[in-house]
Image 1 (cartoon, protein in one colour):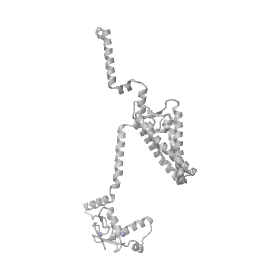
Image 2: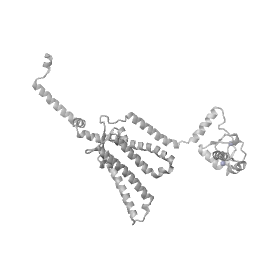
Image 3: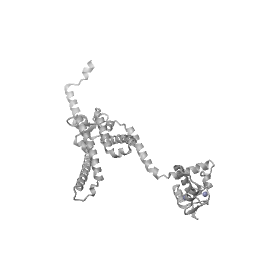
Image 4: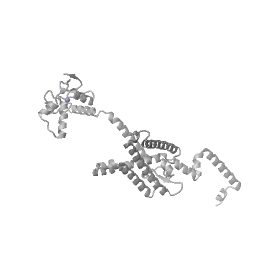
Length: 358
Ligand SMILES: [Zn+2]
Ligand SMILES: [Zn+2]
């Protein structure tokens, strides 16, 4: 007990420490102003930070919502196409708007003020005043109705060719006004997006009109989707993009024929499989034309008689390959360019790398 009492400093010393603490706190504040402001000022700066940050999450949530809609659209359309294939073409806009409206209604009526994509990104809508729920329903109606109305209007105008009407007619003037309105809307959207990039408050014009701000629903978890998952997603995305770019550049026929040739040679077989029917084909007939005709006959179920074979497979503009067998010029040239600069002869299996006119 005695030692504890002795540890308490006398009054003047306490004042000294108070002053020291104050001065050190001030210097710390001036050095790291931004972080301290967020920690110390309880209300406005913290809210501003929440509104402005997470722009990527807000944009991501829109992408997720669009993905979800397109995922649901496909089975919806295919289910209708079984009943009546023309139904989807006729009522596509209505189906799209109906689905969009239903998704918005289901997500807002489930007790949370966020769409499914926004929930995944830990976001929720907030308003400065008034009932958020009521505004969200009004926002949904406005969003669906404006999308539907605009699509119908532009489709009607282009279908009836109002743009091609004489310039002094009412129809042309209506088309010009609509065209002008579209330009204005696009300019406003761009301006809104620039504002969103700078302050992160309203993602779309409609959100601005209804005063709906997106904020984090649980500020302590800024991002509910883990970075590991996003990273993997990005790697896969980059990989598939690369494949989509590289696959059309690959000559798959050439790779396939090259592989088959080398594998067959490795196991001691002739370079290609020679169909006895083709190798015994009489002179004057093109083996490539014959194969094509046989394939066609198999598909259609029509039997090829001798006369048909003789007329359809006769060599046109004949060329002799370096192995000594004859083909139509077009047939052999096509085969050679498909498989690179050379190809295998269908009659003998040797490599053809040169042709001469008969
Ligand atoms: Zn031919
Ligand atoms: Zn040959």
